[in-house]
Length: 103
Image 1 (tube, one colour):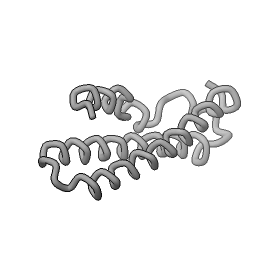
Image 2 (cartoon, helix red, strand yellow):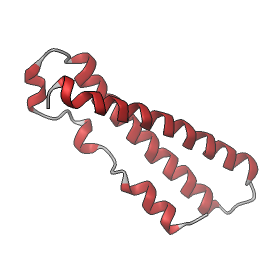
Image 3 (cartoon, one colour):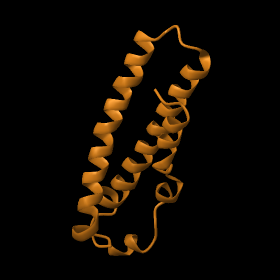
């Protein structure tokens, strides 16, 4: 995967992920401000989903920074994946949580 062909769409995906993370953070904050009487189970679930989303965004940012900033112009760095790529949390996880506890 070359830098012009593959990382442009990856960067756009990372930026969209960051915007959606901001929306999710606002929703979590709004939830805690308006629904303080909910059970600890639901509060723990909301916190867990937010933490997983935070970890996922941090791995995406590290992946993008590694290839687009630190190793820009070094083709040999494209031969292997940086550690944050295989460690990333699958996108399926938040959807599974939302299907288990529908609003």
